[in-house]
Length: 184
Image (cartoon, rainbow, N blue to C red; front, side, top):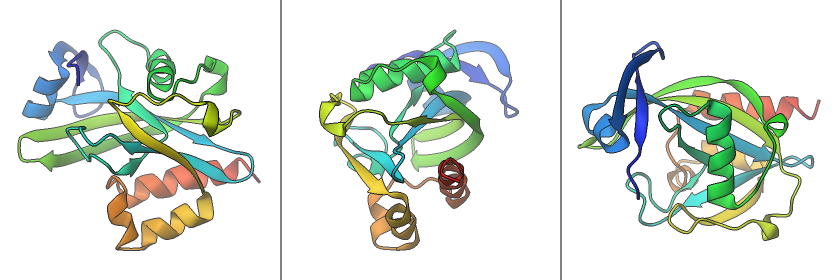
């Protein structure tokens, strides 16, 4: 994994003017930002990615379609478009991204890694077959489309949920509600 410079935020999500390496922000528990992009299909499925085995947090678990840190000075939208292209090889336009909100996540996935992130959340319709996507092997080991109803059931099953990155139940509920609302 390459280290990158990221902007540091305060607990309210405001820029402090400080820039740090991502590794330092995680070591010190400094607040910073990331993008989460959830792809869905019009037939009620969600695209999930399986994190690569060598990831420093939550390796080999199923997660958000695409996610990544926002580089210092980078806009949220440009970070989202960059991460989508890097992780799954898909080039989309800003108009294809629908911003749905921000979520604060405060986690300690390892004793020496404190991840305090403001996630900027986006939805996007997946208009391509997943067979045409190119995975960034350092980040993503697999992808799948899963029906929303089955995904909801997985999140309620104490055995199966261990295969997923442990996001807050409220986070998952919000995302799935927002996606489902697109079908009404």
